[in-house]
Image (cartoon, rainbow, N blue to C red; front, side, top):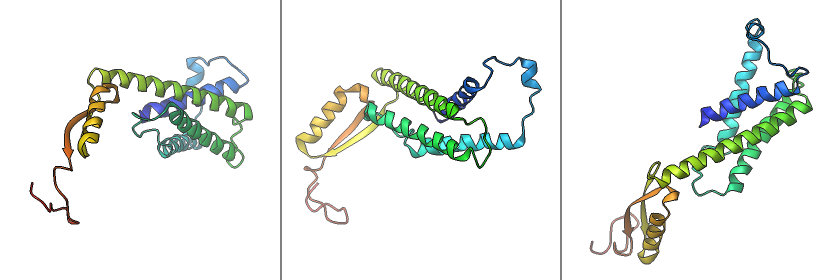
Length: 188
């Protein structure tokens, strides 16, 4: 998913660049092959990819979102794309990035937010369907006491779309009291 997000943000970057350039025609293969690529531009693009990767990781893109709300996932995407766009805006003067006009930044932000929201929700729906069919499951052991542990176990088993498989329920009420070092006081 990390690689897919980086490819997607690279594509939205180039799409925003082509939308805001003066010409909306695609270059021919011969024109692409004669383009001179400066080493400095290559380093800038690698820096952009590294920035996106770090921001996405910091904003929590790759944590488990099985139980998260739609608004939380959208807020993460909104924040991450806004931070990347802000950094591009801040660096346009010191690095002489003439292409980062206000129109480019707005196009980039809109395209990237839309593309990431769409791709993340499609991936989430795909994983939801996979979990309904018994794939992409995580094993859990429930440690609790009495009826509350049993109720949680029943709920998890009934909601197969959550993607959890209950391996065992450990009732701490039956184990007796524990001392500070973890040894039982009573009988087992």
